[in-house]
Image (tube, rainbow, N blue to C red):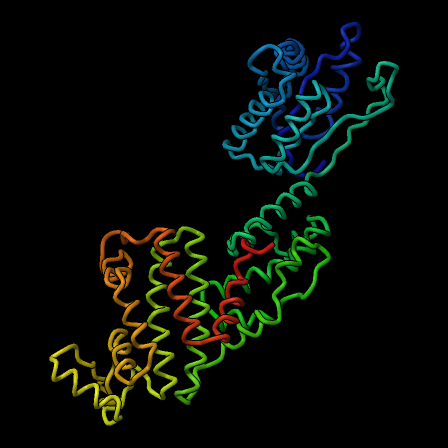
Length: 438
């Protein structure tokens, strides 16, 4: 018996009425004496409750507790038996006992009682089950004197249940949950898990870390994890999560440092905008509406910045003597309109989102007009009222329907700006949403 086991749970059956000693009490006593128990918990039906009481009187030196099913004939109702056994185990666990200190013996009792105890024990992570086997007589009962107490682990079933839970979490994009669910394979306890669980964990955990970093926009962290990824697994359900070459290429490009040449910033910012748009769509999926709302504003801002970079201008460092900047600055001053900010270090102008759009329009760039049109929408004007900016409650546009309409408009603008390349970027960025893949 494994050291540290303290509690034995046992269902109590009827035995045969003409020989209860051989068919019931001897097997029960044998199971009890096989181990050092601080407590033995008997789980009889109303019919077998007297037998459980008789066993308690017979073994006064053993701490025996009895928790019978509450109503007659519940021994044939698997749901009722499960609810009762589950509550008993939960009560034991609440007293400081851990699942590893419990063994559940499901030998005696009806088939419904046995199944209910197995399910209740598995639900609470009890790692070991036992039953009594031996030579069967002509009635199908184990012959007296041939009893053997056998134990088996629930680790296989529990491991597969973890794989199912992790698969669902991965599909839903809850990458952090995958890491919480799947066991680490480099620790001393890893050998306790079945080989297939370890194999899938070795494949899935690095993937979850990679996708988690990408999903939280930490591109450099994601790129640093690429080397740890395995390209293949024999499990088809998990193979679908292996990153494509296009995904790996996009992450590598997103992780590249900021280029020195201004015009080279344009494609980089467009990549970020496309990825952020897809990221915001996933926030809508997860009902994180305020987060999606802020991403929408940032995507709009990024499109303008990328367009300006394409003209060789940086919205954070606009040279005062640049012809287009000087001309637009003169108009602003004449109109007594919003003015450029000034970088105290360089003395260059700085332009916020709306001035970037107006500057582009003044330069004859068609995207400038489109940026101003979209920038006039309520989602932009009410941004500062978000609880995540300056407000005290969620925006009135922070809903799935309203946000999807906003993101469709941004999608169109992004493609209008970046053409086919933007379509490709969006397609690859959206491939991180496994919930929409076949």
